[in-house]
Length: 305
Length: 301
Image 1 (tube, rainbow over the protein chains, first blue to last red):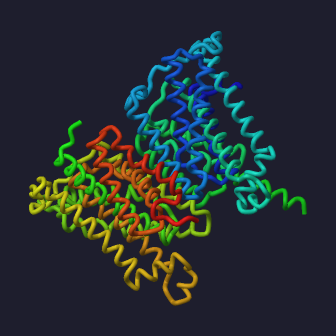
Image 2 (cartoon, rainbow over the protein chains, first blue to last red):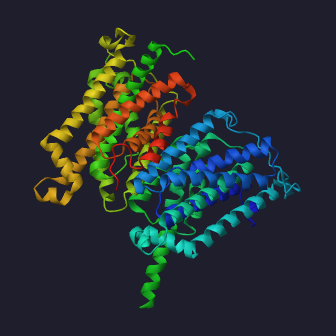
Protein backbone atom coordinates (compact mmCIF):
# COMPACT_ATOMS: atom_id res chain seq x y z
CA UNK A 1 0.00 0.00 0.00
CA UNK A 2 2.84 2.40 0.77
CA UNK A 3 5.01 1.20 -2.10
CA UNK A 4 4.37 4.22 -4.37
CA UNK A 5 5.81 6.52 -1.69
CA UNK A 6 8.98 4.48 -1.43
CA UNK A 7 9.82 3.49 -4.98
CA UNK A 8 9.25 4.84 -8.46
CA UNK A 9 5.50 4.18 -8.94
CA UNK A 10 5.61 3.13 -12.58
CA UNK A 11 8.25 0.59 -11.63
CA UNK A 12 6.03 -0.78 -8.86
CA UNK A 13 3.06 -0.98 -11.21
CA UNK A 14 5.13 -2.76 -13.84
CA UNK A 15 6.23 -5.15 -11.13
CA UNK A 16 2.64 -5.86 -10.08
CA UNK A 17 1.59 -6.55 -13.66
CA UNK A 18 4.44 -8.97 -14.29
CA UNK A 19 3.98 -10.59 -10.88
CA UNK A 20 0.36 -11.31 -11.73
CA UNK A 21 1.43 -12.62 -15.13
CA UNK A 22 3.97 -14.94 -13.50
CA UNK A 23 1.44 -16.13 -10.89
CA UNK A 24 -1.02 -16.97 -13.66
CA UNK A 25 1.71 -18.82 -15.53
CA UNK A 26 2.72 -20.69 -12.39
CA UNK A 27 -0.84 -21.95 -11.98
CA UNK A 28 -0.21 -23.93 -15.14
CA UNK A 29 3.35 -25.15 -14.74
CA UNK A 30 3.63 -25.28 -10.98
CA UNK A 31 0.31 -26.90 -10.24
CA UNK A 32 -0.63 -28.71 -13.43
CA UNK A 33 2.81 -29.53 -14.83
CA UNK A 34 2.14 -27.90 -18.20
CA UNK A 35 4.94 -25.70 -19.55
CA UNK A 36 3.36 -23.19 -21.88
CA UNK A 37 5.93 -21.39 -23.97
CA UNK A 38 3.35 -19.11 -25.51
CA UNK A 39 1.89 -17.20 -22.63
CA UNK A 40 2.92 -13.89 -24.14
CA UNK A 41 0.06 -14.44 -26.61
CA UNK A 42 -2.46 -13.95 -23.80
CA UNK A 43 -0.52 -11.19 -22.09
CA UNK A 44 0.15 -9.23 -25.27
CA UNK A 45 -3.10 -10.18 -26.99
CA UNK A 46 -5.10 -8.75 -24.10
CA UNK A 47 -2.86 -5.67 -24.06
CA UNK A 48 -3.73 -4.98 -27.70
CA UNK A 49 -7.44 -5.62 -27.26
CA UNK A 50 -7.72 -3.46 -24.16
CA UNK A 51 -5.59 -0.77 -25.74
CA UNK A 52 -7.74 -0.74 -28.86
CA UNK A 53 -11.08 -0.73 -27.03
CA UNK A 54 -10.05 2.01 -24.61
CA UNK A 55 -8.44 4.15 -27.26
CA UNK A 56 -10.84 3.80 -30.18
CA UNK A 57 -14.11 2.67 -28.60
CA UNK A 58 -13.87 4.90 -25.57
CA UNK A 59 -14.30 2.10 -23.05
CA UNK A 60 -13.63 2.93 -19.40
CA UNK A 61 -10.42 1.30 -18.07
CA UNK A 62 -12.16 -1.27 -15.86
CA UNK A 63 -14.30 -2.44 -18.79
CA UNK A 64 -11.22 -2.45 -21.00
CA UNK A 65 -9.34 -4.69 -18.59
CA UNK A 66 -12.39 -6.93 -18.29
CA UNK A 67 -12.66 -7.18 -22.08
CA UNK A 68 -8.96 -8.00 -22.34
CA UNK A 69 -9.34 -10.70 -19.71
CA UNK A 70 -12.32 -12.26 -21.44
CA UNK A 71 -10.61 -12.15 -24.82
CA UNK A 72 -7.52 -13.83 -23.38
CA UNK A 73 -9.77 -16.43 -21.79
CA UNK A 74 -11.45 -17.14 -25.11
CA UNK A 75 -8.06 -17.37 -26.80
CA UNK A 76 -6.96 -19.68 -23.99
CA UNK A 77 -9.95 -21.91 -24.69
CA UNK A 78 -9.02 -22.21 -28.36
CA UNK A 79 -5.30 -22.77 -27.69
CA UNK A 80 -6.05 -25.12 -24.83
CA UNK A 81 -8.39 -27.25 -26.92
CA UNK A 82 -5.65 -27.62 -29.52
CA UNK A 83 -2.77 -28.35 -27.17
CA UNK A 84 -4.07 -30.11 -24.11
CA UNK A 85 -3.83 -33.56 -25.65
CA UNK A 86 -0.06 -33.26 -25.89
CA UNK A 87 2.38 -33.18 -23.03
CA UNK A 88 5.82 -32.00 -22.00
CA UNK A 89 8.04 -30.77 -24.78
CA UNK A 90 5.35 -31.13 -27.43
CA UNK A 91 2.98 -29.00 -25.41
CA UNK A 92 5.67 -26.35 -25.00
CA UNK A 93 6.46 -26.26 -28.70
CA UNK A 94 2.86 -26.13 -29.85
CA UNK A 95 1.98 -23.31 -27.47
CA UNK A 96 5.05 -21.46 -28.71
CA UNK A 97 4.06 -21.90 -32.35
CA UNK A 98 0.46 -20.82 -31.68
CA UNK A 99 1.72 -17.74 -29.87
CA UNK A 100 3.72 -16.96 -32.97
CA UNK A 101 0.48 -16.80 -34.96
CA UNK A 102 -0.69 -14.12 -32.53
CA UNK A 103 2.64 -12.33 -32.98
CA UNK A 104 2.21 -12.23 -36.75
CA UNK A 105 -1.36 -11.01 -36.40
CA UNK A 106 -0.12 -8.23 -34.12
CA UNK A 107 2.51 -7.37 -36.71
CA UNK A 108 0.20 -7.42 -39.73
CA UNK A 109 -3.34 -6.63 -38.60
CA UNK A 110 -4.62 -3.16 -39.53
CA UNK A 111 -5.50 -2.05 -36.00
CA UNK A 112 -2.29 -2.91 -34.12
CA UNK A 113 0.06 -0.27 -35.42
CA UNK A 114 2.57 -2.81 -36.78
CA UNK A 115 6.12 -2.19 -35.66
CA UNK A 116 5.14 0.88 -33.62
CA UNK A 117 2.50 -0.87 -31.56
CA UNK A 118 -0.61 0.72 -30.19
CA UNK A 119 0.46 4.02 -28.66
CA UNK A 120 -1.16 6.73 -26.54
CA UNK A 121 -3.74 4.51 -24.92
CA UNK A 122 -5.66 6.86 -22.60
CA UNK A 123 -5.78 5.97 -18.93
CA UNK A 124 -9.33 7.21 -18.78
CA UNK A 125 -11.86 7.60 -16.04
CA UNK A 126 -12.42 4.63 -13.76
CA UNK A 127 -16.20 3.90 -13.71
CA UNK A 128 -16.45 7.20 -15.55
CA UNK A 129 -15.71 8.98 -12.26
CA UNK A 130 -12.12 8.67 -11.09
CA UNK A 131 -9.38 10.09 -13.29
CA UNK A 132 -6.58 7.51 -13.50
CA UNK A 133 -4.29 10.03 -15.12
CA UNK A 134 -4.53 12.40 -12.18
CA UNK A 135 -1.35 12.90 -10.18
CA UNK A 136 -1.17 14.13 -6.62
CA UNK A 137 1.71 16.20 -5.38
CA UNK A 138 3.21 14.53 -2.36
CA UNK A 139 6.32 16.11 -0.91
CA UNK A 140 6.85 17.95 -4.18
CA UNK A 141 6.71 14.79 -6.33
CA UNK A 142 3.84 13.95 -8.67
CA UNK A 143 2.29 10.58 -7.75
CA UNK A 144 -0.36 8.85 -9.83
CA UNK A 145 -2.07 7.34 -6.83
CA UNK A 146 -5.43 6.61 -8.47
CA UNK A 147 -3.76 4.53 -11.13
CA UNK A 148 -1.53 2.86 -8.60
CA UNK A 149 -4.39 1.72 -6.38
CA UNK A 150 -6.32 0.57 -9.44
CA UNK A 151 -3.39 -1.67 -10.43
CA UNK A 152 -2.84 -2.77 -6.85
CA UNK A 153 -6.50 -3.79 -6.51
CA UNK A 154 -6.37 -5.76 -9.75
CA UNK A 155 -3.23 -7.54 -8.62
CA UNK A 156 -4.76 -8.42 -5.23
CA UNK A 157 -7.91 -9.68 -6.88
CA UNK A 158 -5.98 -11.82 -9.36
CA UNK A 159 -3.65 -13.13 -6.69
CA UNK A 160 -6.63 -13.97 -4.47
CA UNK A 161 -8.34 -15.89 -7.31
CA UNK A 162 -5.17 -17.89 -7.93
CA UNK A 163 -4.73 -18.52 -4.22
CA UNK A 164 -8.33 -19.71 -3.95
CA UNK A 165 -7.97 -21.94 -7.00
CA UNK A 166 -4.79 -23.56 -5.68
CA UNK A 167 -6.25 -24.24 -2.24
CA UNK A 168 -9.58 -25.54 -3.50
CA UNK A 169 -10.43 -29.17 -4.34
CA UNK A 170 -9.86 -28.14 -7.96
CA UNK A 171 -6.28 -27.19 -7.11
CA UNK A 172 -5.74 -30.47 -5.30
CA UNK A 173 -6.89 -32.42 -8.35
CA UNK A 174 -4.56 -30.37 -10.55
CA UNK A 175 -1.65 -31.37 -8.30
CA UNK A 176 -2.77 -34.97 -8.52
CA UNK A 177 -2.73 -34.71 -12.32
CA UNK A 178 0.75 -33.26 -12.21
CA UNK A 179 2.03 -36.04 -9.98
CA UNK A 180 0.32 -39.00 -11.62
CA UNK A 181 -2.01 -38.46 -14.51
CA UNK A 182 -3.06 -42.09 -15.13
CA UNK A 183 -4.03 -42.42 -11.48
CA UNK A 184 -6.08 -39.23 -11.60
CA UNK A 185 -7.87 -40.62 -14.65
CA UNK A 186 -8.53 -43.91 -12.91
CA UNK A 187 -9.98 -42.05 -9.95
CA UNK A 188 -12.62 -40.83 -12.32
CA UNK A 189 -11.50 -37.23 -12.84
CA UNK A 190 -12.14 -35.75 -16.24
CA UNK A 191 -8.49 -34.82 -16.60
CA UNK A 192 -8.67 -33.16 -20.00
CA UNK A 193 -11.51 -30.91 -18.95
CA UNK A 194 -9.75 -29.93 -15.72
CA UNK A 195 -6.51 -29.19 -17.54
CA UNK A 196 -8.41 -27.08 -20.05
CA UNK A 197 -10.08 -25.21 -17.21
CA UNK A 198 -6.68 -24.52 -15.62
CA UNK A 199 -5.37 -23.36 -18.99
CA UNK A 200 -8.28 -20.98 -19.54
CA UNK A 201 -7.97 -19.60 -16.02
CA UNK A 202 -4.25 -19.08 -16.44
CA UNK A 203 -4.70 -17.46 -19.85
CA UNK A 204 -7.42 -15.13 -18.54
CA UNK A 205 -5.31 -13.91 -15.64
CA UNK A 206 -2.28 -13.50 -17.88
CA UNK A 207 -4.63 -11.40 -19.99
CA UNK A 208 -5.66 -9.33 -16.99
CA UNK A 209 -1.99 -8.61 -16.36
CA UNK A 210 -1.39 -7.62 -19.98
CA UNK A 211 -4.51 -5.48 -20.14
CA UNK A 212 -3.50 -3.63 -16.97
CA UNK A 213 -0.01 -3.18 -18.36
CA UNK A 214 -1.37 -1.48 -21.47
CA UNK A 215 -3.27 1.01 -19.28
CA UNK A 216 -0.23 1.72 -17.10
CA UNK A 217 2.24 2.20 -19.94
CA UNK A 218 -0.42 3.48 -22.35
CA UNK A 219 1.11 1.12 -24.88
CA UNK A 220 0.66 -2.32 -26.39
CA UNK A 221 3.73 -3.36 -28.35
CA UNK A 222 5.14 -6.28 -30.27
CA UNK A 223 7.44 -7.04 -27.34
CA UNK A 224 4.37 -7.98 -25.29
CA UNK A 225 3.49 -10.80 -27.71
CA UNK A 226 7.01 -11.91 -28.63
CA UNK A 227 8.47 -15.22 -27.55
CA UNK A 228 11.06 -13.37 -25.47
CA UNK A 229 8.25 -12.32 -23.15
CA UNK A 230 7.05 -15.91 -23.00
CA UNK A 231 10.57 -16.91 -22.02
CA UNK A 232 10.84 -14.13 -19.50
CA UNK A 233 7.77 -15.26 -17.60
CA UNK A 234 9.17 -18.79 -17.50
CA UNK A 235 12.35 -17.37 -16.01
CA UNK A 236 10.47 -15.32 -13.40
CA UNK A 237 8.57 -18.38 -12.25
CA UNK A 238 11.58 -20.67 -12.31
CA UNK A 239 13.79 -18.19 -10.50
CA UNK A 240 11.20 -17.52 -7.83
CA UNK A 241 10.23 -21.12 -7.36
CA UNK A 242 7.92 -23.34 -9.42
CA UNK A 243 4.77 -24.35 -7.63
CA UNK A 244 5.16 -21.97 -4.71
CA UNK A 245 2.56 -19.30 -4.08
CA UNK A 246 4.97 -16.40 -3.60
CA UNK A 247 7.70 -17.65 -5.93
CA UNK A 248 6.47 -15.93 -9.08
CA UNK A 249 6.13 -12.60 -7.25
CA UNK A 250 9.70 -12.82 -5.98
CA UNK A 251 10.88 -13.96 -9.41
CA UNK A 252 9.11 -11.11 -11.18
CA UNK A 253 10.60 -8.67 -8.70
CA UNK A 254 14.10 -10.03 -9.33
CA UNK A 255 13.86 -10.07 -13.11
CA UNK A 256 12.22 -6.63 -13.41
CA UNK A 257 14.80 -5.16 -11.05
CA UNK A 258 17.59 -6.78 -13.06
CA UNK A 259 16.17 -5.19 -16.19
CA UNK A 260 15.87 -1.73 -14.75
CA UNK A 261 19.21 -1.79 -12.93
CA UNK A 262 21.07 -3.14 -15.91
CA UNK A 263 19.36 -1.15 -18.62
CA UNK A 264 22.54 0.86 -19.09
CA UNK A 265 24.50 -2.10 -20.42
CA UNK A 266 22.28 -2.56 -23.47
CA UNK A 267 22.05 -5.99 -24.98
CA UNK A 268 24.28 -7.45 -22.29
CA UNK A 269 21.02 -7.63 -20.30
CA UNK A 270 19.97 -10.49 -22.58
CA UNK A 271 23.22 -12.22 -21.71
CA UNK A 272 22.67 -11.71 -17.97
CA UNK A 273 19.11 -13.07 -18.31
CA UNK A 274 20.44 -16.03 -20.28
CA UNK A 275 23.10 -16.77 -17.67
CA UNK A 276 20.48 -16.53 -14.91
CA UNK A 277 18.43 -19.08 -16.82
CA UNK A 278 21.34 -21.47 -17.16
CA UNK A 279 22.36 -21.13 -13.51
CA UNK A 280 18.77 -21.63 -12.36
CA UNK A 281 18.35 -24.78 -14.41
CA UNK A 282 21.70 -26.26 -13.45
CA UNK A 283 22.06 -25.40 -9.79
CA UNK A 284 18.94 -23.88 -8.48
CA UNK A 285 15.86 -25.70 -9.70
CA UNK A 286 13.77 -25.01 -6.60
CA UNK A 287 14.06 -21.25 -7.09
CA UNK A 288 14.48 -18.61 -4.41
CA UNK A 289 11.26 -19.27 -2.49
CA UNK A 290 11.62 -23.02 -3.03
CA UNK A 291 15.10 -23.00 -1.51
CA UNK A 292 13.96 -20.92 1.46
CA UNK A 293 11.04 -23.28 2.09
CA UNK A 294 13.45 -26.20 1.89
CA UNK A 295 15.74 -24.61 4.47
CA UNK A 296 12.79 -23.97 6.79
CA UNK A 297 11.59 -27.54 6.31
CA UNK A 298 15.02 -28.99 7.07
CA UNK A 299 15.34 -26.74 10.10
CA UNK A 300 11.94 -27.68 11.53
CA UNK A 301 12.60 -31.38 10.91
CA UNK A 302 15.85 -31.12 12.87
CA UNK A 303 14.18 -29.32 15.76
CA UNK A 304 11.20 -31.63 15.99
CA UNK A 305 13.35 -34.67 16.65
CA UNK B 1 -5.30 -12.41 -60.22
CA UNK B 2 -3.26 -13.66 -63.11
CA UNK B 3 -0.86 -16.41 -62.13
CA UNK B 4 1.89 -17.01 -64.58
CA UNK B 5 3.40 -20.44 -64.80
CA UNK B 6 6.86 -18.90 -64.49
CA UNK B 7 6.04 -16.97 -61.35
CA UNK B 8 4.66 -20.04 -59.61
CA UNK B 9 7.73 -22.09 -60.53
CA UNK B 10 10.08 -19.35 -59.41
CA UNK B 11 8.41 -19.10 -56.03
CA UNK B 12 8.36 -22.87 -55.73
CA UNK B 13 12.12 -22.99 -56.32
CA UNK B 14 12.76 -20.24 -53.77
CA UNK B 15 10.43 -22.09 -51.41
CA UNK B 16 12.37 -25.27 -52.00
CA UNK B 17 15.49 -23.34 -51.09
CA UNK B 18 14.02 -22.20 -47.76
CA UNK B 19 12.60 -25.67 -47.30
CA UNK B 20 16.08 -27.14 -47.59
CA UNK B 21 17.14 -25.00 -44.61
CA UNK B 22 14.06 -26.01 -42.64
CA UNK B 23 14.79 -29.63 -43.45
CA UNK B 24 18.42 -29.54 -42.34
CA UNK B 25 17.55 -27.68 -39.11
CA UNK B 26 14.58 -29.83 -38.16
CA UNK B 27 16.67 -32.88 -39.00
CA UNK B 28 19.31 -31.73 -36.50
CA UNK B 29 16.60 -31.17 -33.90
CA UNK B 30 15.21 -34.65 -34.58
CA UNK B 31 18.63 -36.30 -34.25
CA UNK B 32 19.25 -34.53 -30.92
CA UNK B 33 15.76 -35.20 -29.67
CA UNK B 34 16.04 -38.86 -30.58
CA UNK B 35 18.95 -39.58 -28.28
CA UNK B 36 18.92 -36.80 -25.70
CA UNK B 37 15.17 -36.23 -25.42
CA UNK B 38 15.88 -32.54 -25.45
CA UNK B 39 14.41 -29.90 -27.71
CA UNK B 40 17.44 -27.87 -28.54
CA UNK B 41 16.19 -24.31 -28.25
CA UNK B 42 19.73 -23.12 -28.93
CA UNK B 43 19.55 -24.62 -32.43
CA UNK B 44 18.68 -21.32 -34.07
CA UNK B 45 21.43 -19.50 -32.19
CA UNK B 46 23.96 -22.15 -33.25
CA UNK B 47 22.79 -21.80 -36.87
CA UNK B 48 23.47 -18.07 -36.49
CA UNK B 49 26.85 -18.85 -34.93
CA UNK B 50 27.68 -21.07 -37.91
CA UNK B 51 27.00 -18.18 -40.27
CA UNK B 52 29.08 -15.82 -38.12
CA UNK B 53 32.06 -18.19 -38.06
CA UNK B 54 32.01 -18.07 -41.87
CA UNK B 55 31.58 -14.29 -41.89
CA UNK B 56 34.29 -13.58 -39.32
CA UNK B 57 36.59 -16.12 -40.92
CA UNK B 58 36.25 -14.24 -44.19
CA UNK B 59 36.40 -10.66 -42.88
CA UNK B 60 38.38 -10.72 -39.65
CA UNK B 61 40.64 -13.74 -39.54
CA UNK B 62 43.23 -12.26 -41.91
CA UNK B 63 43.68 -8.96 -40.03
CA UNK B 64 43.68 -10.90 -36.77
CA UNK B 65 46.56 -13.07 -37.94
CA UNK B 66 48.40 -10.03 -39.28
CA UNK B 67 47.75 -11.02 -42.89
CA UNK B 68 45.27 -8.41 -44.16
CA UNK B 69 44.80 -10.11 -47.53
CA UNK B 70 43.87 -13.48 -46.04
CA UNK B 71 40.30 -14.76 -46.15
CA UNK B 72 38.99 -18.04 -44.85
CA UNK B 73 37.23 -19.06 -48.03
CA UNK B 74 33.73 -20.45 -48.38
CA UNK B 75 34.80 -24.07 -48.87
CA UNK B 76 36.97 -24.02 -45.77
CA UNK B 77 34.13 -22.42 -43.81
CA UNK B 78 31.83 -25.27 -44.85
CA UNK B 79 34.14 -27.64 -42.96
CA UNK B 80 35.55 -25.42 -40.21
CA UNK B 81 32.32 -23.81 -39.02
CA UNK B 82 30.43 -27.07 -38.29
CA UNK B 83 33.56 -28.36 -36.54
CA UNK B 84 33.91 -25.28 -34.34
CA UNK B 85 30.21 -25.19 -33.49
CA UNK B 86 30.11 -28.97 -33.07
CA UNK B 87 32.99 -28.71 -30.60
CA UNK B 88 31.10 -26.03 -28.70
CA UNK B 89 28.15 -28.43 -28.71
CA UNK B 90 30.33 -31.17 -27.22
CA UNK B 91 31.39 -28.74 -24.52
CA UNK B 92 27.78 -27.74 -23.78
CA UNK B 93 26.71 -31.36 -23.55
CA UNK B 94 29.66 -32.36 -21.36
CA UNK B 95 29.33 -29.49 -18.91
CA UNK B 96 25.61 -28.75 -18.80
CA UNK B 97 23.11 -30.95 -20.60
CA UNK B 98 24.65 -34.07 -19.08
CA UNK B 99 23.47 -32.99 -15.63
CA UNK B 100 19.87 -32.79 -16.74
CA UNK B 101 19.10 -36.26 -18.06
CA UNK B 102 17.69 -37.41 -14.76
CA UNK B 103 15.25 -34.54 -14.31
CA UNK B 104 12.19 -33.49 -16.33
CA UNK B 105 13.03 -33.02 -20.01
CA UNK B 106 11.61 -29.55 -19.85
CA UNK B 107 14.74 -28.38 -18.06
CA UNK B 108 16.75 -29.21 -21.16
CA UNK B 109 14.50 -26.91 -23.16
CA UNK B 110 14.91 -24.16 -20.56
CA UNK B 111 18.69 -24.52 -20.40
CA UNK B 112 19.08 -24.33 -24.15
CA UNK B 113 16.72 -21.34 -24.17
CA UNK B 114 19.13 -19.62 -21.77
CA UNK B 115 22.06 -20.51 -24.02
CA UNK B 116 20.22 -19.07 -27.01
CA UNK B 117 19.73 -15.78 -25.15
CA UNK B 118 23.41 -15.65 -24.21
CA UNK B 119 24.62 -16.24 -27.77
CA UNK B 120 22.11 -13.83 -29.24
CA UNK B 121 22.93 -11.18 -26.63
CA UNK B 122 26.68 -11.41 -27.16
CA UNK B 123 26.40 -11.09 -30.93
CA UNK B 124 23.84 -8.30 -30.75
CA UNK B 125 26.33 -6.42 -28.69
CA UNK B 126 29.04 -6.54 -31.31
CA UNK B 127 26.99 -6.59 -34.50
CA UNK B 128 24.05 -4.63 -35.70
CA UNK B 129 20.75 -6.53 -35.72
CA UNK B 130 20.15 -5.39 -39.27
CA UNK B 131 22.93 -7.70 -40.40
CA UNK B 132 26.08 -7.84 -42.49
CA UNK B 133 26.34 -9.41 -45.90
CA UNK B 134 28.79 -12.22 -46.54
CA UNK B 135 31.05 -11.57 -49.51
CA UNK B 136 32.87 -14.85 -49.66
CA UNK B 137 30.62 -16.46 -52.26
CA UNK B 138 32.94 -18.47 -54.53
CA UNK B 139 33.40 -17.32 -58.12
CA UNK B 140 32.10 -20.59 -59.54
CA UNK B 141 28.75 -20.20 -57.74
CA UNK B 142 28.04 -16.69 -58.95
CA UNK B 143 25.72 -16.03 -61.86
CA UNK B 144 22.58 -17.79 -62.96
CA UNK B 145 21.71 -21.16 -64.43
CA UNK B 146 19.24 -21.69 -67.22
CA UNK B 147 16.77 -24.30 -65.98
CA UNK B 148 14.87 -24.18 -69.32
CA UNK B 149 11.70 -22.99 -67.58
CA UNK B 150 13.47 -20.15 -65.75
CA UNK B 151 16.79 -18.55 -64.90
CA UNK B 152 17.83 -19.42 -61.36
CA UNK B 153 20.76 -18.13 -59.28
CA UNK B 154 23.57 -20.69 -59.29
CA UNK B 155 24.23 -20.26 -55.62
CA UNK B 156 20.65 -21.02 -54.67
CA UNK B 157 20.68 -24.13 -56.82
CA UNK B 158 23.91 -25.20 -55.15
CA UNK B 159 22.49 -24.54 -51.68
CA UNK B 160 19.45 -26.72 -52.44
CA UNK B 161 21.70 -29.46 -53.78
CA UNK B 162 24.22 -29.48 -50.95
CA UNK B 163 21.56 -29.27 -48.22
CA UNK B 164 19.64 -32.16 -49.69
CA UNK B 165 22.83 -34.18 -50.05
CA UNK B 166 23.69 -33.64 -46.39
CA UNK B 167 20.12 -34.44 -45.32
CA UNK B 168 20.02 -37.71 -47.21
CA UNK B 169 23.53 -38.64 -46.11
CA UNK B 170 22.42 -38.18 -42.52
CA UNK B 171 19.31 -40.24 -43.18
CA UNK B 172 21.47 -42.96 -44.75
CA UNK B 173 23.89 -43.05 -41.80
CA UNK B 174 21.09 -43.29 -39.25
CA UNK B 175 18.78 -45.69 -41.06
CA UNK B 176 21.15 -47.85 -43.06
CA UNK B 177 24.49 -48.23 -41.27
CA UNK B 178 25.69 -50.06 -38.20
CA UNK B 179 26.53 -46.81 -36.42
CA UNK B 180 22.97 -45.68 -37.09
CA UNK B 181 21.54 -48.87 -35.68
CA UNK B 182 23.46 -48.24 -32.44
CA UNK B 183 21.96 -44.77 -32.36
CA UNK B 184 18.46 -46.04 -32.92
CA UNK B 185 18.93 -48.78 -30.36
CA UNK B 186 20.28 -46.17 -27.95
CA UNK B 187 17.06 -44.18 -28.21
CA UNK B 188 15.02 -47.31 -27.49
CA UNK B 189 17.01 -48.77 -24.64
CA UNK B 190 20.25 -47.07 -23.58
CA UNK B 191 21.13 -49.49 -20.77
CA UNK B 192 20.80 -52.49 -23.07
CA UNK B 193 23.05 -50.91 -25.68
CA UNK B 194 25.51 -50.02 -22.92
CA UNK B 195 25.52 -53.67 -21.89
CA UNK B 196 26.62 -54.60 -25.42
CA UNK B 197 29.74 -52.56 -24.87
CA UNK B 198 28.75 -49.36 -26.68
CA UNK B 199 29.90 -46.20 -24.96
CA UNK B 200 26.47 -44.57 -24.76
CA UNK B 201 27.49 -41.34 -22.98
CA UNK B 202 30.11 -40.72 -25.67
CA UNK B 203 27.54 -41.49 -28.35
CA UNK B 204 25.16 -38.95 -26.80
CA UNK B 205 27.88 -36.30 -26.67
CA UNK B 206 28.85 -36.85 -30.28
CA UNK B 207 25.22 -36.87 -31.39
CA UNK B 208 24.69 -33.46 -29.85
CA UNK B 209 27.90 -32.24 -31.47
CA UNK B 210 26.76 -33.62 -34.82
CA UNK B 211 23.27 -32.14 -34.53
CA UNK B 212 24.51 -28.64 -33.82
CA UNK B 213 27.20 -29.11 -36.47
CA UNK B 214 24.33 -29.59 -38.95
CA UNK B 215 22.84 -26.30 -37.77
CA UNK B 216 26.16 -24.53 -38.29
CA UNK B 217 26.48 -26.08 -41.75
CA UNK B 218 23.07 -24.69 -42.65
CA UNK B 219 24.27 -21.35 -41.30
CA UNK B 220 27.30 -21.28 -43.63
CA UNK B 221 25.19 -22.27 -46.63
CA UNK B 222 22.66 -19.57 -45.74
CA UNK B 223 25.27 -16.83 -45.18
CA UNK B 224 25.63 -15.71 -48.84
CA UNK B 225 21.83 -15.67 -49.31
CA UNK B 226 20.48 -13.93 -46.22
CA UNK B 227 22.28 -11.19 -44.37
CA UNK B 228 24.19 -12.52 -41.38
CA UNK B 229 22.62 -11.08 -38.25
CA UNK B 230 22.33 -11.98 -34.56
CA UNK B 231 18.59 -12.51 -34.89
CA UNK B 232 18.64 -14.72 -38.00
CA UNK B 233 18.42 -17.84 -35.84
CA UNK B 234 15.66 -16.55 -33.58
CA UNK B 235 13.47 -15.93 -36.61
CA UNK B 236 14.26 -19.29 -38.14
CA UNK B 237 13.90 -21.48 -35.06
CA UNK B 238 10.24 -20.76 -34.39
CA UNK B 239 9.32 -21.71 -37.94
CA UNK B 240 11.43 -24.83 -37.63
CA UNK B 241 9.61 -25.71 -34.41
CA UNK B 242 6.34 -25.48 -36.30
CA UNK B 243 7.84 -27.72 -39.00
CA UNK B 244 8.80 -30.19 -36.28
CA UNK B 245 5.30 -30.12 -34.78
CA UNK B 246 3.74 -30.69 -38.21
CA UNK B 247 6.13 -33.49 -39.12
CA UNK B 248 6.04 -35.13 -35.72
CA UNK B 249 9.30 -35.79 -33.93
CA UNK B 250 9.33 -39.48 -34.78
CA UNK B 251 11.13 -39.85 -38.04
CA UNK B 252 14.25 -38.55 -39.73
CA UNK B 253 12.73 -38.84 -43.18
CA UNK B 254 9.60 -37.12 -41.86
CA UNK B 255 11.54 -34.01 -40.89
CA UNK B 256 13.27 -33.83 -44.28
CA UNK B 257 10.05 -34.25 -46.28
CA UNK B 258 8.05 -31.90 -44.06
CA UNK B 259 10.77 -29.25 -44.14
CA UNK B 260 11.00 -29.29 -47.94
CA UNK B 261 7.28 -29.35 -48.58
CA UNK B 262 6.51 -26.60 -46.10
CA UNK B 263 9.13 -24.42 -47.72
CA UNK B 264 7.31 -24.91 -51.02
CA UNK B 265 3.90 -24.28 -49.43
CA UNK B 266 5.32 -21.01 -48.13
CA UNK B 267 6.60 -20.19 -51.61
CA UNK B 268 3.22 -20.90 -53.19
CA UNK B 269 1.47 -18.72 -50.63
CA UNK B 270 3.75 -15.88 -51.67
CA UNK B 271 2.23 -16.04 -55.15
CA UNK B 272 -1.38 -16.61 -54.14
CA UNK B 273 -1.74 -14.41 -51.06
CA UNK B 274 1.52 -12.68 -50.06
CA UNK B 275 0.48 -11.28 -46.63
CA UNK B 276 -0.08 -14.81 -45.32
CA UNK B 277 3.32 -16.12 -46.40
CA UNK B 278 4.87 -15.70 -42.96
CA UNK B 279 2.03 -17.38 -41.12
CA UNK B 280 0.93 -20.12 -43.47
CA UNK B 281 3.16 -22.70 -41.76
CA UNK B 282 1.58 -21.93 -38.41
CA UNK B 283 -1.91 -22.28 -39.85
CA UNK B 284 -0.86 -25.57 -41.42
CA UNK B 285 0.26 -26.58 -37.96
CA UNK B 286 -3.13 -25.83 -36.43
CA UNK B 287 -4.81 -27.77 -39.22
CA UNK B 288 -2.54 -30.78 -38.75
CA UNK B 289 -3.00 -30.70 -34.98
CA UNK B 290 -6.75 -30.83 -35.38
CA UNK B 291 -6.56 -33.87 -37.61
CA UNK B 292 -3.46 -35.64 -36.33
CA UNK B 293 -2.24 -34.39 -32.94
CA UNK B 294 1.00 -36.37 -33.14
CA UNK B 295 2.02 -34.77 -36.44
CA UNK B 296 2.14 -36.24 -39.93
CA UNK B 297 4.97 -38.72 -39.34
CA UNK B 298 4.76 -38.92 -35.54
CA UNK B 299 3.71 -41.85 -33.46
CA UNK B 300 0.86 -41.48 -30.95
CA UNK B 301 2.16 -41.75 -27.41
